[in-house]
Amino acid sequence: MEKRKFIRKVCLLGDGGVGKTSLVRRYVEDVFSDSYIISFGTKVSKKVIDLGEVELTLMIWDILGQKSDDPLHAAYYRGANGALLVGDLTRPETMRHVVRWKEEFLKVCPGAVFVAASNKSDLESAMQPRDLKEIVDALGVELKRTSAMTGEGVEELFVALGKGIMERSK
Image (cartoon, rainbow, N blue to C red; front, top):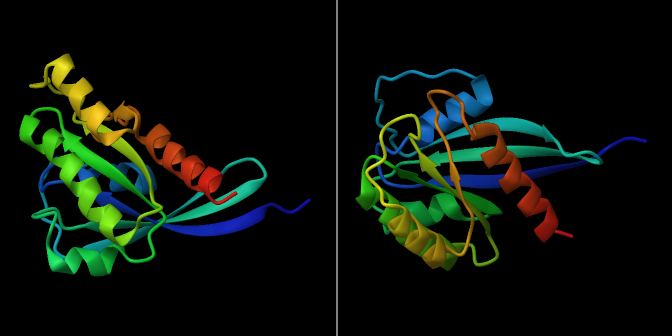
């Protein structure tokens, strides 16, 4: 029996320098570079996930992370089914900002599925557990620890988002 095939758009959201581009490169190409390249506008990557009876193609939009309320962002968000909310464990303010990124995204995509990442888990965290719990409570989604450098949690992060999107579309 042939698998049912779906294509879904997802966006990566978070402040600049949190590792969004590195997470996509680790997931799609299985590479990591520690040189920082600022994303301008958006870059779209594609990855196919095998979810048993379903073959899901994720169109991953890596969006410039300078300001969550940038009017240009709304144009990039349109038509998205879900988003990865990414913060940097070494910079607490970026973790707190993921709440605002989610709120802005929901204005354009009210039925979106979210998964959150506390990235750079290979480095010493500047976050207290209680502060992370407050963020999780405010987001209402699970927060997964990831490291684009080591690959920790990256595959699981994108698969969780894909599964959540397919669950929502049933």
